[in-house]
Length: 462
Image: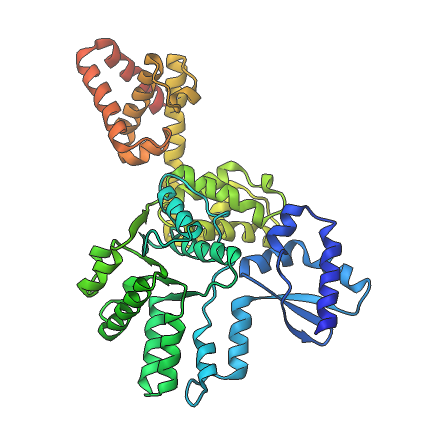
């Protein structure tokens, strides 16, 4: 094992000289754990499937070429979760008749996801408060907000922020005992520790959770109707709170809206600070995609901005689905060796979510319609499109912007919030005001009414 670790270190140090420091640090920094040795193949543990995919796709052949130049070994990679599952299968799949040490190990399976950090969390108006609050909790040595309660819909980044808090704390204090779990796993641990009436298992359960310096609990809403588990979690909460131990909890809704959760537990969740993550704006969705692309392909400029815009305009409510669509698109094009085009976005995503193809086509049509209206208004009033989309309040620019908004709403009946996303992410109240302003002028000012008629004729000829 020592020899193999030396081979890995020598190989990766040599390879470091051939790629950028940023790429090396992003993929290979702190990767030095050998999972197993199979004949002349050394299996290296990596934190995620995403990491393994990128290494195997863009780096593995070069790494193995270096290793073969001075040793008999080559390398393969395995995700940390897969390695742990394989080890568990080999060793023991029973909790019965185990020692206290075995029980402790079985409870210690949930690890923080190393890839979830503050540095790679993309922020916008929809999540900035949650992000800054999480940073404050991670940086502060005192438990100023306890618990920090993060809520929002599925796939918006709650688990990312929770893991980022834990990773940041561990980076600054390796001795901290940070316990991460889901409410389902907590319920399972409680059931397994009590169902067989083993004193050792019950003690192991209590010790594992009560010795936490920081407790991270994901998806607390799944304690729904689990009365005994709720009672136990309430005792754990009280114990940690009284001992000034930080807690971070995530949920899909505010604490007071949790269903079938005992009132005193919901009340405790409100002791600290509640922050929400909202649906990401179009600008944030596009920003997320643009920041993810360099981690997936070596030449990000190969993907046209129109392809990213199409994905951003299709997967509106869930960042996890948004990133999954991008990953599917890139993998599809790379695997089939076809260009990264807008048309291939449709082909790549059709098998993944065929029911949204009509929605995608409709959204593509909407984007083109809005672009046509902006160009028409820009040409008619001699106001650049960039000014129409800006925050400028000059009278001629404001009027042109209001006219474009009025025409889009009148002709295509898009939701106010949706229109706002194409005008600097303005809120629906601003869009509504713009529409009402032009509507009133068409009734009181003949010249404005004439402008509307002319512009509508141009638009309808597209």
